[in-house]
Image (cartoon, rainbow, N blue to C red; front, side, top):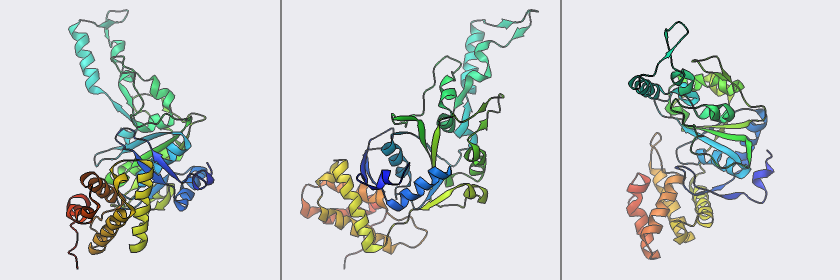
Length: 334
């Protein structure tokens, strides 16, 4: 991976919809890509920090599509544990299979006539690979079968890669979980190997499997020092006031050119009016209050572009919808 892969002729790309991710446009920022390329060559995960809606997660998706690499993402929830990212044990499926075998009076016996556990109930059949397992060792993940014989499939959000030996793994919003999760990731981030506690197998990296790990954080809680030392850190900070107006407008123009949804109906003047409204609202909000960002700005453009065909109505409609779409009402004019 080289920096000029992203910053020469094709800085702006259309991102195809995949799973719950909609069509989008992405502009590759040179400073951001320096961090990505540095993390790749150093073999370090890249921790991307910033307020919600600035495009932290989209960065991972854009790198994967631009390079033609596999893309696997996992969204962290407050109750997510480290083991959930590696594997799960389908105890319910195993119980259901045991009940079916009992109903059919199928039981195994050894040479002395003692009952033995039927092969269908062997615990290895009920280990379900998690996203980290699929990322580092898809061959062994594919070889797992459930007790009912159904072949497992790779996680849903996976592009058809041109380079199946490369993967971008996105661990999204890690600060939602408690400190046990990032601490648990230390072994995986350090060497890519992990053990399955239910048997003696060690899941190792494939020889040619190369991975870029991008982790995002809304910076809502501190992450452990040991975890932070493993990561390169990229802070996504929005520019201020007039620079932010231009920044938002450029994102809207890229979206209009690449995606062709209701934003395409809007003029540059509309985009600038909406951007100025976002900046106006952000200035009135104190620190610690979530502020509208790029994602909310684009949503406002979509809403107005879909609702109004009259350019004269749009300026007022932006303000009328601010409380609904941006989460904060427009300040009083004048």
